[in-house]
Length: 341
Image (cartoon, rainbow, N blue to C red; front, side):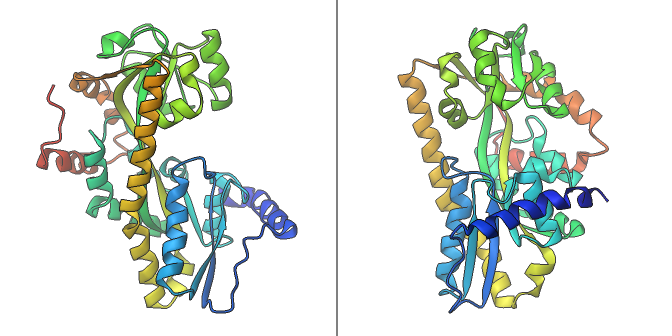
């Protein structure tokens, strides 16, 4: 089984942390439940706020009967390692990007599809409602229980050449994407020339003209200083990212019903606080763009982009259930959230 090929990589970082004594061991005197929560982001990454808020609120609600040993900044490994540690029960809970979950539950591939969600209101409604809960519960079949989704915002096209308003404007633009087949196909279908590069290579590739642009959310655009090379950011909103909070199913079910429900409730009740923090960080990034002389344009012709990526849904129909796609899009139709043109 694939998971066992990683076991040595899982054990080593955990042993290293224990030996070094990271200072995460809480006072257990009043605690009935003590568990580990791990994630890759550090405090500079705003999605970190979700895990930190969950820890603080859970300990507060339980009056100290639940204590969380908090490991951030990848001290227990990168996301793939964390997910597999949770699978084995070495770590009780993890927060990871939904994309890495596709390695263990292919149904999560649906969240990587282009133009599945039309705006943040649609995204929040779908993932925080019955459809999102179905995805979280689908993890039961692989020893997990999903607890909540936390939005990391929409990804947009930025480049050094021109504003993008339609697929025609993408023609001739070399756009860096992650090494993901869906992302590569999406950018090509949208009219660009997708170029896979690692994140560590992107800044120099933009500065030297190896690529004309890339795609990501406004916060990453500013924090990575991509504005040094790219002065156009177009709000294409073609992909949207989210983290998911996941517990080891056997561990969660071993807890008293009271604590189990408290954990489930807290994971979702912190959403408003997390969303405020994330939205504020995006507003700050947009303000920084203006100061840096970046031209930001809305994209009013999104229907053209939506139509351009339809072949991808046909190609992935055996992995991404068409009926689930229809249900997600119907959430937008019900609230009149579909793009006008």
